[in-house]
Image 1: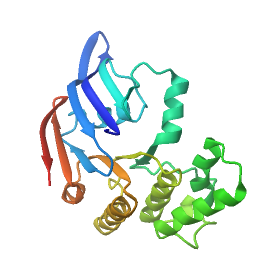
Image 2: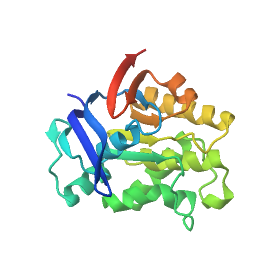
Image 3: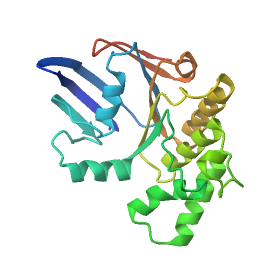
Length: 228
């Protein structure tokens, strides 16, 4: 069964009195273990698609199925529950909480899930930090980390709750080429070793090079779907 499936998905935005279509009937299936990049020019609808799959916005029409269940009509509370339990997010601006340490930023999703055991939390956080190469930096705050290190913290934060799917919106946009390649190699290794499913939205040719599937969008539609 697919992790996520969209069926004839549409999304319209209002601009004054005008209706602006962002998605025009998108059909897409993401299966466990995929490493997929959604690509296309600005305004093609790729970020809108990720936001809908990530339960951060609601579609105008069509269906989104997660693990076979149609979530299109879920309440805000039900969508928040899905985000907490099944989805991880990696953003181009990292979105770390500046007053928290590296450890505390990664710990936060477990606290939101209601994990009570301090021992279990510590084991999971330290394991996630080790996986992304940040062991020994637990007490540093974001301002004391490089851009590449901050993105590693964001990856650890996404991984720590073992989500079904990680959504990464332009994850290399604020990194230089060396750090971009290191971050993508890390995510590729996590995908292979842990079977973590990744779905990217990107303009970056380097992300496209690493991806094993390219879904190309234009004018709110999927125009090409290439597996490698």
